[in-house]
Length: 208
Length: 139
Image (cartoon, rainbow over all chains, first blue to last red):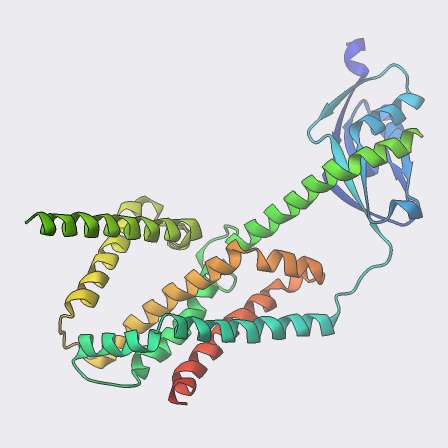
């Protein structure tokens, strides 16, 4: 039982946000399980202080946390569980999304997708295909088969909405849409990159 | 006779290549899984495959043999809508494969407003398509 008491389980958080000049303590970067009186003491141990040179992201390695704890508590057995590091995002000022930028992006997407769909129609000679199809299906010659084309146009939008599943989310199911999965994949790829490329530097900084 | 056999072999090979390519394209874009996910009918996967295969065969039949039907034009509303939904999913899937939204939203710090960006693309497609059929082709 006495051995059990000295084991500390430590699990690094995945990603945290801190303010400038923040003194990162163990409780910020990790969750720990230890005996009641120890937990509180260990959580307050400082690990790292954010400085201007750190810029936007720092990676705090599990090793750094362990060595910080060991400075204060020599004979603890520390058991790390889960991710080996925490990505620390330094927020210098709360950035408000710019409405102008948003509007511009909106306009680019709107005009861009409108013109690409027109180019696509021309590219695959959709007008000719639809005229021919209209004739084959109904037996009537029609230069502008609008009864075919207008539902097509609205279906185009409906198909995109269904694919991204935002509007009908509550009605169909709670599963994430492909876009949400894609956003998550992208974020994970970025995190992976940061872990690989920022980690060496930040570990070196702590020890020098 | 030999010539005919040669033609059959060549056209059969061409058909296999095109059919394989078509299925591969649909699969990569993940439209069928998406439809199954939305309708919660993943167990009917075989029927969905059949739908795509028969659709492709029927399409080749119509375009090669040019049979004459006399469906009342009003039914083309439904056919046109299905046609549009399919092309729309195709376009959405392509945008998604190319990772446009995640990168754009991150660049301009708009992770929460991404739905409006999707809205821009959706309205853009509808407007562009209507403009094309109603006005552009008459020029």
